Amino acid sequence: MRADHQSGFDGGRTRAMVALLVTAIAIVALGPRPAAGHQSHGGTPSPVAAACSPASPPATGGTPAAAVSPSSQAPVDVDIGLPHVGTPVATTCVTVTLTVDKMAAGPRTLVVEVVDPSGALVTDAEVMIHTRSLVMNHGISTNPAVPTEPGRYEVERVPMGMAGAWQAEVVVTRPGYEPVTAAFVVDLEGPA
Image (cartoon, rainbow, N blue to C red; front, side):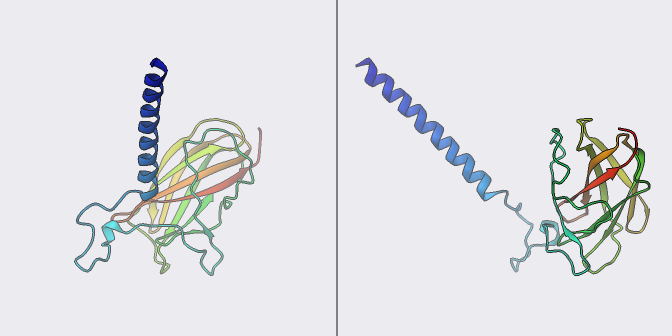
């Protein structure tokens, strides 16, 4: 009789765990929903709810956005499919281009150019740059970029003191839009 009781207990616990797992999967699959008040009376999302999702590359040869979590700490293969510095990355809301003052290891100046789909310079963005070595775990450096001229945002003295491949993740946040993330590979020369 004790075996039956134990079996019923395990079955109940298993059913509860399965129900919890199914609920978690459903939450992830359905994703977040827009908050109330973010749609106009016609049912079309307002700019507040507009999301910036990756788009096809523009005819000018841009590359689709690639998001790689800055929390990933382990070194990865250099050929991870990210565009290299200087390559425009297009999304539905903006095109982001990252350039570097020099391709040598050391404190670097990173410059981000942000334009909208019409080609107009974006002047209302907040830009954050996360950098990490893809060769060795040096942690992540997070640097806010400051506007230096219309559509141009800059960070000086970003710590990139080792030769090799680095990932630079650019996060562009504009009022009324979801943040856009574009990641680039920066290959630096110099002492290892």
